[in-house]
Image (cartoon, rainbow, N blue to C red; front, side):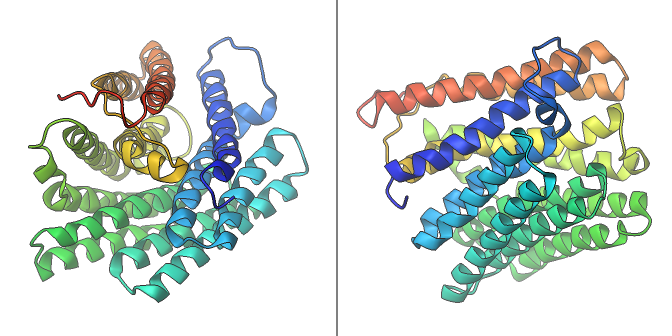
Length: 362
């Protein structure tokens, strides 16, 4: 499993969760598709966050740690999502997912033991939020109360990675204090939300906005934006993702009382989970996938197609949400799915071309 070929089954588990989540998401939007089973629709969020993103992040960290036992984290997370899809008793899926998230936390603990650093602590807190969300879900909390914790897992994991790279820039002590303050405000919102939920969402929204502004100010992507080819593409993805995070924070602040269901809830979730998170995935894939799978990957201008489709369709979807215009939400959601599928297709094509393929400039 520690070899590149041995990681393919873990990638396959993540891929199954992604495709099932996309199918279920279209079903939730009212598109008349054949049903894969109730779990694909009912568990759309857990399949995406735990089954796909959790497995993928855990796999990346296991590769970084270079310890065989660390691969238990993506394996357990992926099997937990598969258990949901197969209709096994809910306790089985929850237990596997909780074990996977706990293993990821331990991975970060080991990395921090090797090299104590703020960015590793930030990502470790993110893993703890992933575990806390699963435990809240297992305890019977509705998914709308769990989703801020899972958003924290993804946001802090990504923000921690960007914080690490910010060491290459002259960030002042006050600048780093701003990152810690925004993170603390977000975490305080999660704790407040255990009581008055809407107030907690709004406070966490302030933290998200603070993190987005910090990233927009200090991300090294502003430097790589000046370079052609893959570095510029990655920078465009990262900076556009930060803008979606800022919008998500604003939506959480202004519409926190609607964080239950309905179009405003859809907008608040997908500004973060799609706009921010998938922008990061698009941007990091040309580096992470070759490292995880041990393959070469040529840059192609076609990558801008899935980036543009994601953002245009998400603007339509969130605009439809805020205007309570269902056709915009439905067609925007379909565009989101097509953007992700196009991303997968473009990635496979780039991997097939290998490192000897044409590295196209911008």
